[in-house]
Amino acid sequence: QVQLVESGGGLVQPGGSLRLSCTASTRIFSVNGMGWYRQAPGKQRELVATMNSSGGKYYADFVKGRFTISRDNTANTRYLEMNGLKPEDTAVYYCAAPNRRVALSAFYARMMNLREDDYWGQGTQVTVSS
Image (cartoon, rainbow, N blue to C red; front, side, top):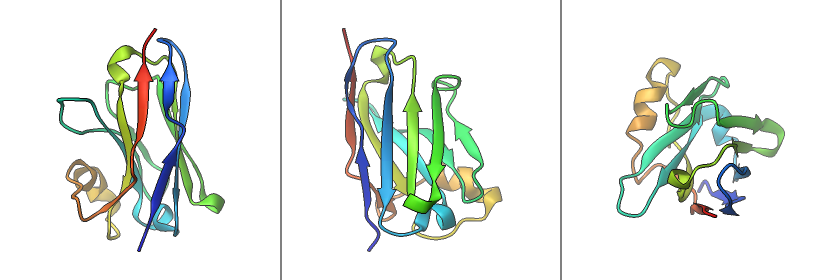
């Protein structure tokens, strides 16, 4: 069973920075790719950023220029560096990975439709407030 463990959330002032980490128990990120999602109270979960198995990156428009996804393959870890945080970034952030390998051409569509039977972390709270 694949396990994903997140860390790095917390309380930060507007304009501040945080770095989230997601460590997998296997090499799943290198094989299947992964993504970061967030869910604010009363809102639907939304896709924030992805990294496919080849290292290709995608960012949602609302985080472009502020968030950066990176990797450490030797540690089976992916990071989400968040700068210029805004109150509207407040949410529970989740990392997740597909439960099967995905063709690169289909990766974005797959990540937009990740299911509960895919692999998910436990979530980490990010609160942006003065």
